[in-house]
Structure formats: structure tokens, C-alpha cells
Length: 407
Image 1 (cartoon, rainbow, N blue to C red):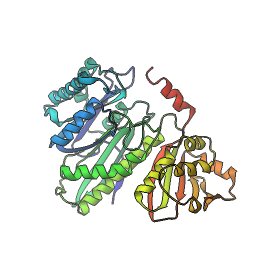
Image 2 (cartoon, one colour):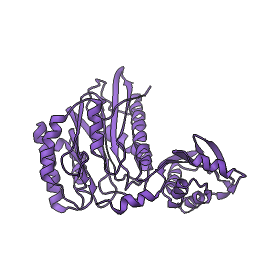
Image 3 (cartoon, one colour):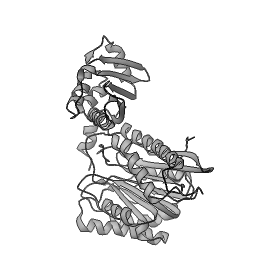
Image 4 (tube, helix red, strand yellow):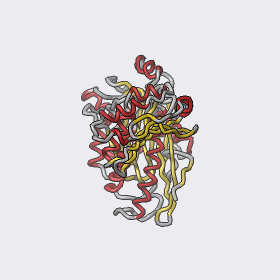
């Protein structure tokens, strides 16, 4: 049994965190550190954008070469992307500062940055901030929350989740934090995430579990069809739960994957709901597809349609936009078989049956769509595969936020 608990990156045994204001941004906290008191197995997934920020290049190299990871240092306000060799040098200096302050190898330090592209890291603030971070490290839930707050950019709230479960009779905890509000698109986005667990597991299986879970969680959200240069999701497993190390895909591995899915799904939905300027979370389920891949493509096509997103903002049950988005997705299906529904806390309503409008109540449809969490369901009735994607409405405030993002 997997149980949700309070907390984030400090929920698991042996993990500490800190979040401070170092002076990178004008006022808000802007540096975070997550630290394992013992060396941990590390794994990560990163942006698919060809243009990769300096920290992403550093982390990919560590992911391939380092056997153990012990810390993740993150900054917000400056992305350190498109900054050339100077950006790579500055990123290494940030890692070295953490290495020296914690007395750990430099190749045991993941780095992450988020913020404005093209700006260079203010190294005076970074190098002054690192000792402050180390001094502030704590294993309390509050420390984890401060770290989650420090990586925010246009996010309106910190995003955390933690769960607890049993493996080999031992209590295992897994917790995480993430940021992401704009430049969010399937196949990773402008998001940073750190997940920690006291589970004992091999590096190879840790990487596989993360990579597989991302396909169904972080890769299934979209805010604005933009994929960032900085997306990074890390997981550290330090083994302090005391279970027998997982080295094969057994029941313990399955339990871990289920727990990881709960945490990543929770964080993914929080990012989608907190899309820049958003007023509601939009969930899209595609049912009855021939293959899971086709269901994924269709659900992503709906969730990324600006016309669907604006209709949801206006509480308008303009179902033709959903069918249209499905039609240009590249997936072949029979429109004459499709049923469409909308659902929220106010109820569920069938808008379309076999490709044509039902005699539904526009008033009730509007009420359903006025909820803060709205679901659209498309049933192709052509198979038994399904997929779910998450996004948000598109509002006036999205334009306002992004029109003066650098100011």
C-alpha cells in the first residue's frame, strides 16, 4: 500500500534541503540545495531541445559517468543558456563551490538553472549563496518547502509531493519538488524537478524507472507548446531505508515504480494547473484507441490546441475544436464513431455521440466547464488503449506575463 504523506525532498531518510535569497532575483528566493548525507545513486531526464543550457550539458555528462551523486544545486532567475564557454565555466564553478562547502566530489553535484535565457550567472551572488545554503541545510518539511519555493519563476505556488510504502518489510519514503509554469510542452519543458528516496536500488533500474515514468507524467503536460532549454528532472536514491538493493524487475521494483508514478503525476498536474495565467486545470482522456501511442498523440493534440484552451477559459462547450484537434494530429481514426464528454465536480455530460452533437444542455455544459478542474473525454471506440494528458486554459494573463517576462 502506497500512502501520500506531508513533505517533499526532505521526507526520505538522510536528505536535507535549503532555499535562500542570494541576490540573483530582485526579491524572491533564488537558490536551492538538496543534499544526501551519504552518497546516492542518481538518474535524470533532460530537455529534448537541441539548444541545451550549460547545466544540462553538465548533468548529462554526470548521468553517464558518475556512479554516485550527493547534491543538487539549483538557481532561479537566470537560465545560463546560450552563454557559450563562459556559461559552462560558471556552471562548473557553482558545482565546485558546493563540492568544496560539503567536502564531496565535484562530479557528485548535479546543477540546474531556470530563468531568462542569454543572461550570465551573477557569480558573486552564486558563490556567496552556496555557503549560506550549506549552513541552512535541514531535514525538516519546512526546509524542503523553502527549496521548492526558491526554484520558482512565474509559478504562483511551490509544488511538492511525498509518499510512503513498504519494501522487504522496510518503510521506504519517496518525495519530490518541481517548478514549471511557462515554456511547458510534452517531452520535458521549462521545468526543474528533484525526487529523493531512501530506497536501495541499482543505478540502472533507477534510470529505467524514471525514464519510463516520465513518458506517462511530465511528458504528458503542456501549457504553451514551448519546450525549454533547461528542463531537468533528477532522482537520488541513498539506500538508507535498509531494504535489499533492487537489482531486478521484481515485486519491489513494481511497487517503487507505482510510488514514483504517484509523485510524478501529482507534480505534473500541479505544473499544468499553475500554467502562466491559468484559471483551471484541463485533463484530456482518450479512450478506445488502437494503440497507446495513438492515444498519447491524440490527447496531446487536444491539450495543446489554443482554440480548445481558449474555449475552456470561456466555459464554451465548443466540441468542434476538440474533433478538429484530433483530426490534424496525424492519427487515423473514424470520426463517425467518436463520443465526446466533459466532466467536472458539477457532473458529466455527453456532447457528441458517433461524431454528431447530442441534445445536450448548453447551460449545464457551461456550468461543468466553470469548475477549477475540467476533464474532456474522447472515446474512439476502436480499441482498448488509452492515454491522459494535462494542460490548462489560455487566458489574457498568459500574454501579459510573457510580454514583459524580462522586466
